[in-house]
Amino acid sequence: MATEPFAQLRYNHSVSIEEEDLTMRILMTIAAAVLLFPPTDSARGAEGKQDIVDTAVSAGSFGTLATALKAANLVETLKGDGPFTVFAPTDAAFKALPEGTVHELLKPENKKKLASVLTYHVVPGASPAADVTKVKGLTTVNGQRVDIAVDAGKVKVDDATVVSADIHCSNGVIHVIDRVILPASDDIPTTAKKAEAFSTLLAAAKQAGLAEALAGEGPFTVFAPTDQAFEKLPAGTVESLLKPENKDRLASILKHHVVSGRVYSDAAVKAGKAETLNGDSLTIAKAKDGAKVGNARLLSTDIDASNGVIHVIDTVLLPKGGTQASSQVPSALHVSAQASCPAAGH
Image (cartoon, rainbow, N blue to C red; front, side):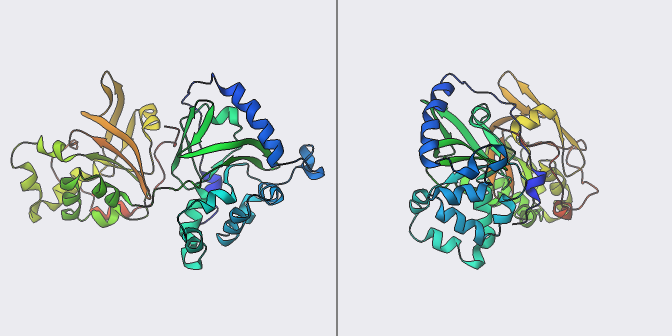
């Protein structure tokens, strides 16, 4: 994976959670940190600290991580200026993966997949534990977000637990975790198919010639109407739109549900609107019964896919021209674009 995203991606701390156990947790983890990372001459003082890679290697508990970073050509990146925050799995964490997983990931042909997994453990910027516990999610260099939660004084990163925090390095900070966390590996259409609630949407995307594009690199944000949402349309509407002669009209409607980039729900609500691929804008706002996109209610949000994020809605969104065809063609989905608003925590 290219290293440029380290400079491009960012996160914020706009969502707060309770911190009542924070002081006790930090005191408990300081002792663990000292045991796991005994101070050395090079680690004392701001000028003498080792970088993230050298710190991990010196600890002696991250041999597999170091090997994986080398195989993915990420060593020099994590030895760079940064700063970075690394949620570092121990050797024991890698051993807990299904048998053969590490061996497969280290194969040259799986370099891209390995880089995706490793960059899912890295967040741009130096975030000490006090900052991490103030958010519900962090955007990783991978592009996807990890979930952050505090439960009974323990910090969870997805399904991993932080066992040692705040190991400060010359170019960032390390938090040690007890499991390898894995990013979403399915693209948007595959993720939707596995949910078993979007058969009409998938059929429409295929008929409009958009399914292959939505499985592409992206990233895209999709406001996905459920099968029940399509059933709310006037009788015969779906059948009519699925006819070959109405392909452009169908594509216009579907592109009205797609935004370029990964736009998570909190960032979308904060922005208040999002420009869709058919050229129209969607209004996004909080409501008494939750958040709404146009006249649709958000049923579920922030479902990560390998090439974007899905928000589930209960109503099909129609562009300003109703079901009239857009002047844009379906290939517009292939246009590379950045997120229309910054990614943030859940």
